[in-house]
Image (cartoon, rainbow, N blue to C red; front, side, top):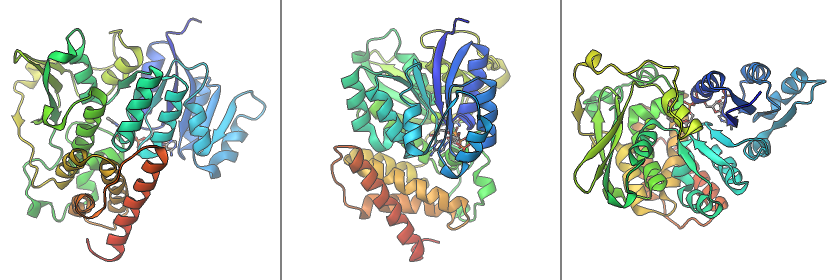
Length: 388
Ligand code: NDP
Ligand code: MG
């Protein structure tokens, strides 16, 4: 059978990964490899259904279960970080979908680039923590990074057919999350369940919390800078409550081109995988009449510390973006474990920009080192009861 494309998916069992598999099924895309962290049962099911030739489980203690499931077959089994990196360089793959969560995706991204593989990138933490080394390597190797994040896919789409040099600014849209218009006082007692309840999108837990703190928009601000070679002052963040306008680009003539669609990640996932094709997507078409009105607003930088901290971090440059990202990953995990309050996430992330020393980033080891330091910084603050 002739396949349209061959892909390898890092993070196949997650929200993005499973939607990508749906696209693959619909469009005759060969899925040569799948990788997950610990959900070995779903991973095995996926690998069997898609007749994958390579399967990777990150958690070593699940390796035996994975091996047993494919005993007597010629399916190649991998594990750990080495395995994840192997999945990023598979010879047969035309494109690697990196949809793991967290900056653990950075090393595989760099491996894919060195192997000359184009990347469909959902894993935004990769670009936040390692933006400089990733974009430099991609340029050197002539590798294309196709954005999967809906806002960046929108910007990428709005750039098509226009002269990049005539761009004046990017309008990065934000839903505002579940706590739009809330004050800090009102956010003091937010529960995990409330923070996990996003108005427009169903996503993995980490990004759902990031959407509630607006860290997600801060990460996306940094992601946009690296993907589209922008300066911080060229990005305006606008709240678009319904998540119908996924972002827009303004050109020198003040013409603004936006991309719209229902809030469904399958559209940007498919565009990244099949670029430049525009074929039927397994999602609802947009009915503007059903929406009736679209509402807009300004983000509240004072209440949502994470957003301000990210903008400050990218303006400071160097290791600061990697440090705020690392601190946030740790803080979100601690919030989800019930150890700290919702507002503490923002306090911790902001305190990184005030208290940690910045330094330049030259390579992967530098990123890994400052990421670790930021996580330690957060853990120390929590153990010293500096935050509640
Ligand atoms: P999920 O938590 O739903 O899924 C994460 C996936 O990554 C799972 O398959 C998980 O495996 C896997 N994974 C996590 N850590 C590792 C590891 N160390 N090694 C191998 N696999 C790993 O997250 P989402 O799909 O929501 O998000 C993925 C990325 O995409 C994030 O960076 C997020 O910010 C970004 N994104 C997501 C959007 C969405 O709508 N969900 C929208 C835009 C961007 P397991 O199941 O075994 O834990
Ligand atoms: Mg997004």
